[in-house]
Image (cartoon, rainbow, N blue to C red):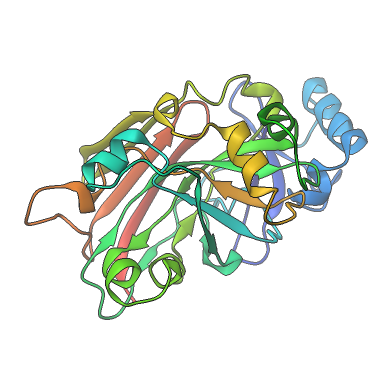
Length: 285
């Protein structure tokens, strides 16, 4: 199923995109697309049955804002340098273990919402990523297979990053990852049963119509199941938590000088097979 949240900021309603591309209202069945939904197989089954019946109310998509595909996110866990190509382009060795950082949930916005370039920023960068949404509580998982079994769904994410804040201002990566609006997420959450192999997905991103990233999740250093297993050794993952699993080659930081970091007025578009497409205009904060 393709589940999404539509409407004004703070007042999104749950919806479903059916097989014909028709937007359907789920607010009569559920209150939100969130961890509580993903953790409840009986409710998911009712939603699936209602979708197959074709009787869910139709929503007029014209002019309707699409919000973050997941509501009430507890935490966003980032995985750094997780593609061979990306590590190579920035001159880094492939990590021996996954690099973990955290993004605050309040950085999450809708897939087409405006993204704000921070004041004093000179190196705002793009990162198209596969997002993993946890569907069952995960702690101390024993295998990558268990990791995959705890995935509730997948989403498209732009892990926007300010490189100077990240690498040149001391401390951890958090300064460059947690600026407001820096995690566009959606347009929809695709339930895990519709993504049988998350390691075969094309990942693409364009800036002002020019293709910048053209990768595939097969290039990941640590596959999705291993990432979930690994993270569960250090923190408990709850339903609705999101892991962003790294970006392929093609970011601004990996380009020759002068590096084409984002400026106000730039438009970024990105997509992953089966997970939809995003479009953001960048503006000054």
